[in-house]
Each structure stands twice: as structure tokens, then as C-alpha cells.
Image 1 (tube, rainbow, N blue to C red):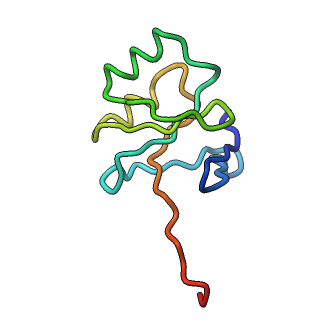
Image 2: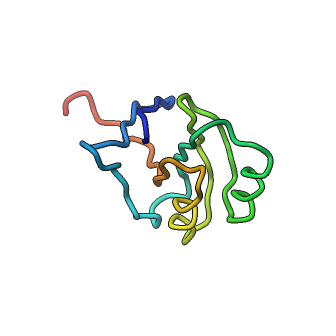
Image 3: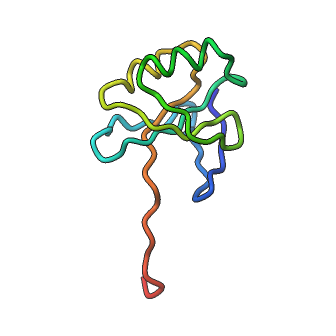
Length: 98
């Protein structure tokens, strides 16, 4: 089951009740939050790389910030070792008056 994760810009909880919150909107970002069951081994890293996923940074809770190719999100989510994968959009800054 997916668990909450904290990135440098946000605390993200992929769960809403019993179902993981997901988005299939890949068109506005090339970044992906990828949560896995445990630390990735060399074979799993190679499998991700073959799909077009570039691991950029580890964030807590077995999660990686990645760059990914358009059209592969469904394939990434289908990997046995992936708990949760979702396009990552950096939060926008708001004016103090808002």
C-alpha cells in the first residue's frame, strides 16, 4: 500500500480512503514521483531505465523523483515493485494577499 511521502516542496499522501490518488495527466510535466516497495536493486533500476525513467533524487519513504518519457506511465505503474507512480507538478507560489 502506498504511504505518505515528503518532498522538498510538499507532503504528499497518495491515498484517499482505500484507493490511491492518481493522475494520468502526463502532458504538463516530465517529472514523476515513484514509490517502490523497498530499495531498488540494479535489475529494477535497469528495467526503469529501459522504459525511459531517469532516477533524479531519492525522497523519503521509498520514493524517487524521476524524469520520464511521455506515454510510459501505465507501464511504470504495472511493474511489480512499484507501489505508486504519479506525475509530479511543482506547487505554484501564491501572492501573500491571496
